Amino acid sequence: VQLVESGGGLVQAGGSLRLSCAASESIFPVNAMGWYRQAPGKQRELVARISSGGSTNYADSVKGRFTISRDNTKNTVDLQMNSLKPQDTAVYYCNAESLNSGSCCKFYWGQGTQVTVSS
Image (cartoon, rainbow, N blue to C red; front, side, top):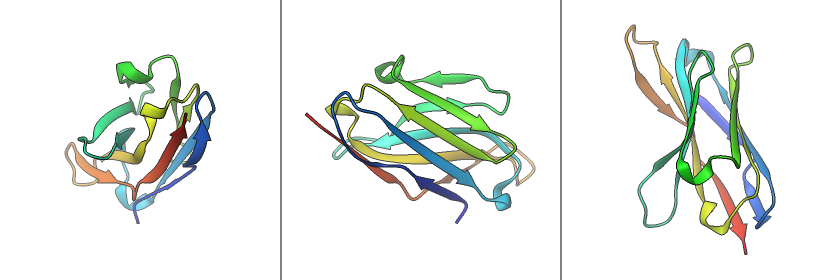
């Protein structure tokens, strides 16, 4: 398993959750890492992405509420989610853009973790 996620669960609206993802050495080196989500009946969408240098970008719907961070020494990426809303309910997937093939980039995905926000 190349990416292992943890931290999903059930929370009330307005609450917080923190998702974590650890990358295995088999996919090193890694360029950007990020989090995507997929709600029932909808396409998978980018939530947040962080480059190897620390540059970040967020979906408009989560700006100001979610924060992505990365620890290159531990090869982990976290997503701190605050002020959660019912519309944040989805399966969240960790993503890594690997350079292990010698060129950019091969995408790897975690198994997904459920986040449910009740109203």
